Image 1 (tube, rainbow, N blue to C red):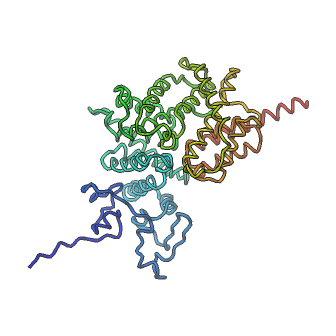
Image 2 (image 1 turned 135 degrees about the horizontal axis):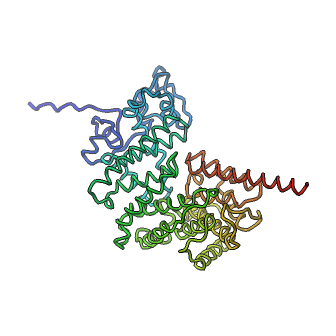
Image 3 (image 1 turned 90 degrees about the vertical axis):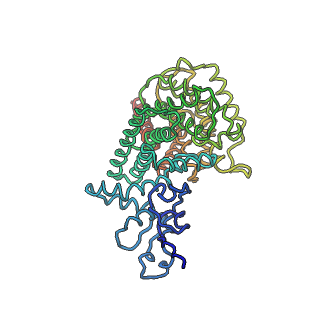
Length: 498
């Protein structure tokens, strides 16, 4: 007589992989124990997947009475249990986060909050920090690698939690989320410090470099740690120098392309800062690294020159154009850096102006290009326009400070406004972070009230859709400059009348 097979528990919750295999899932995020041991892909269900369909037709069922509002899911009047917290929409999750008091914080963090925050990172936050339509090896490959490394790499785990929690705070302005985000951030820093003092080869550790990249993102897009970006950048630059630049080798992995682009992006935004910032320190050390990294990317064989921008995971515009905008920004902030070749810059600027003047007027997406490719092309136009305007204001060697207003009928302004009007109702464009800086900078050049209104609406929509602190800083800085200029104009008018 055959011995009966050992009973195995079926599961209605947990990851989809375990549910399809009909085994019990321990529901540990980001990778459950069963999938981790077997090295299987750990896929997780949506909220609708976790509701037993047998109950949907019964009027007495707590699952029947639902109010759907976008991603808002309200189920009956009962307090949700842990599993409901994991499977309901973002609004319901955040409602529970708001109701927490200080006595529950530590217990909730371990039992409820961390899985919720991990899910927010995967479902919402990640799609905002990497460019849409980039090479799938960047988009899906990096997320898969983050989730795999999180299970064993504590600095990365807490860096993910810090970024996602800070984003939740900016969405709902919950003070507890702000404090929790800084707690996770502090833990990530502590774990990184412990890892760096141990005898190891940091240049070979993908988890370490990914953690530092996410901490840079936290400083740029999150709340309260912008001033920490320089030390994270220096650490990332040192690792990339040991890993790639000192070896004078070509890039051999997609992850290295993403890491280099990410560091260049944060060099740009940390060095550029706000237009009303006081003159800062010289950026020569960053520029030297930039030239080496730019040359390294140019020698990369992963992407063809024609598709390099559209497949880019972070920058999305020609890197040389990105660098030119940074150098001209530094000139407006201080003076020309000693390494700046003015004649070479002039040649580059004129080349971009010829490109702008020779290009056809911005049109709707053609059959041969995707909407994401249109985003990258038009973002490149905006950067080229900003470069042209900055160059023309550099020639008279004006005093350091924000750009000056120009006539509204100049061809650069009209081309830029045309691009913004093209995407006036396109949320995908507004979520695409490469348009943040050129749109913000354009606001300092425009003089017509309707152009300012268009730019303000564009920046406000970017804030509403992304809740990135970077965008909010730009809005406040731009509005304060507009108000100050309006006050100066009123004062001048009064003096003339007097």
